Picture (tube, rainbow, N blue to C red):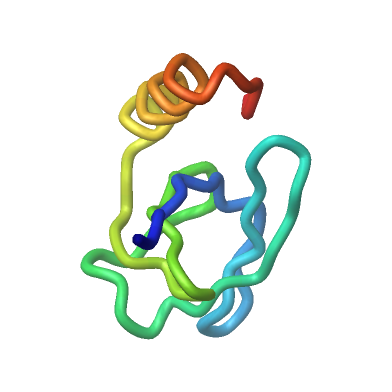
Length: 75
């Protein structure tokens, strides 16, 4: 089973975004995303690619659900 994680975009250069969740930063490709994101948006990330853009409110709500179900702090 695979899990896609919502991550906040901190910067974008060319077609690569630097994203963060729970203090962990990664770079992800924006080649296959459904809608071009902006800094501050959240994206669903899987296997190094952003798959879907989330607005800030939806991203934070999704992380809250992850935190509650996994009993961890991600924000």
